[in-house]
Amino acid sequence: MIRFLLCFLAVGCAGLAQSRVAGIKAEVKPLVRISGHASSLNSTCGPRNPCSASINVPYDTQGTPDTRANTWGYAAAQQIPFQFANVPQGYRVRILRLYGDHVAWVHGPVQPGTHSGVLWGIYSSAVHLGSANVPYGDDACFIYHQGAVSTGDFTQYFDNDVHAGGLLQDDNTMILQMAVFENETGSPIHQEITFVLVYDYEPVGTLSGAAQ
Image 1 (cartoon, rainbow, N blue to C red):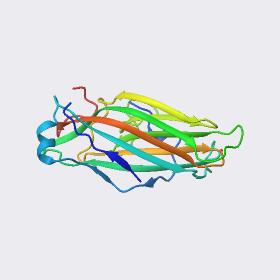
Image 2 (cartoon, rainbow, N blue to C red):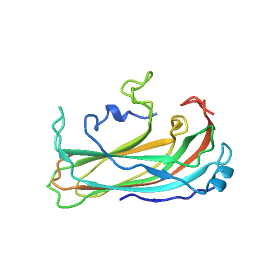
Image 3 (tube, helix red, strand yellow):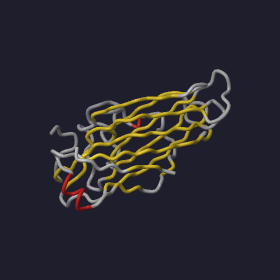
Image 4 (tube, one colour):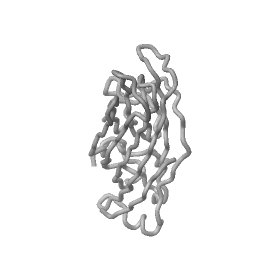
């Protein structure tokens, strides 16, 4: 289940393609549309008057045995596409800032001395061809965080300016990926990411990654 609250207000990362989830078949969730009243949204969002939306996404999984080279334990991933609606004709969405928290804990007994990795990232729908400038990078991914859990819980606060890489493709879709990797705890891992995204519109033809 995806829980999200829309709050429209006037107000380079390591590539997932080369990360711990490379080679894991991710579960792709149904597309979620981020929308509001067209009249008020289109009249208030703009380069000098960004909008924002808050989103909460949970994920609970133990994963399946990871047979990839140089790995151990269990792993799994899910991908959730979010498409912005009511975007004015001739414009694209640029994500400017993402801030919130990522929490995780083991949902069950933990075998002593064991751990599990957790991660999340967001990228555009651009074809993942890596990066022309950064080895092992992915130009389509504009935020990427990871951590680990064991007998305690995990909380990570973040506040990232993603303006440089946050210009979405013409479909105005961003994809959230969450994953568990090298889970050797023997139990499922529960994660929740809660964040506010700040965005505005830019004319079609704007170069991705261009500083404005």
